[in-house]
Amino acid sequence: MERYALLTGTYNLLMGGIKDFKRSYPTEKEAFEEVQRIAQNDPFTHWAQIFDKKTDKAKIYRIVDKKIIEEKPKDCPHPESKPQAEPQYA
Image 1 (spheres, rainbow, N blue to C red):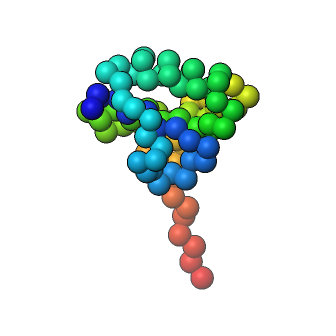
Image 2 (cartoon, rainbow, N blue to C red):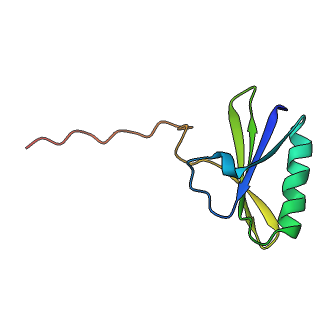
Image 3 (tube, rainbow, N blue to C red):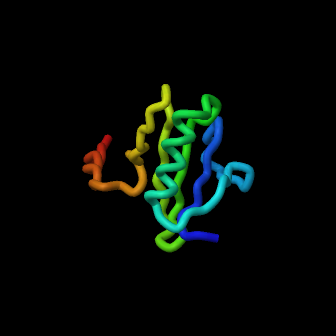
């Protein structure tokens, strides 16, 4: 199996699964080129994920009207610490 695994599907349930695995690629560029091909030709695929097995990180994409939109996580990891509310006393 190559370094970059490509997973795609109709619904992204965030649980993963072998049925969403399409194939693996030696480079991220080749995997993304397949995402581009799928976006243009498969009207039932609405998300894609390229998983780097070496770094254990993934890029997640939404496919809307043949356009590829990269998802940027907003809640994890926390890029900035949020100020804590001051304690309230009775």
